[in-house]
Image 1: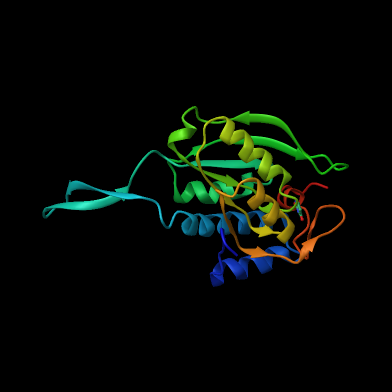
Image 2 (image 1 turned 90 degrees about the vertical axis):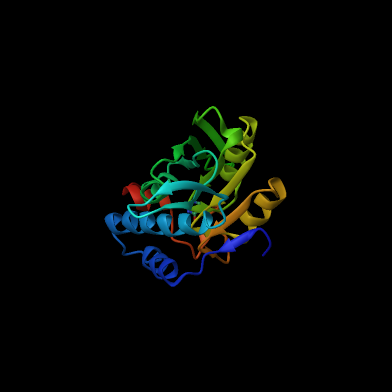
Length: 209
Ligand code: URA
């Protein structure tokens, strides 16, 4: 599917299976989401632009590569997106973080914003929007709308699981935003949950219900 990268690395797929199983503990679920976050981040950042700088090793001067441009921004959609954050920050410790508070109205399934705080220079940075579940895509679209209003131009969306309906809607609303996911599942059910999915990612991660 164009514009979508399925990260089919064996470690990601194995950990995803562990997360889907309903008997997985809150602690285990959270830890696995962090680990997969790190692995997804590795893939999403694979093509970052590079530049060369001059350094001195203990033996000689050399030209060595480094990532070019301003620090990345991780933009987790609260609350489930936070589950990716620690793993990604372990890999990119200097990244900036934009928090986007959205919840799904259970009746309309529409995204309602209650919090937004982001770096002021979004226009100059690559922004990675994080949400484990791309279901109806309402939250993802609303978050990206808001980030674009605040100047973001270079955005990528990272999730763990996607529904085909969510992918199609995202691509229609934001065709410029590439998507990375560990899997695309069968469908959405009438409550907007991904099937077979893994249930409510936020509840499973935080032990709420
Ligand atoms: N959000 C979740 O946490 N799970 C789903 O299946 C869909 C949206």
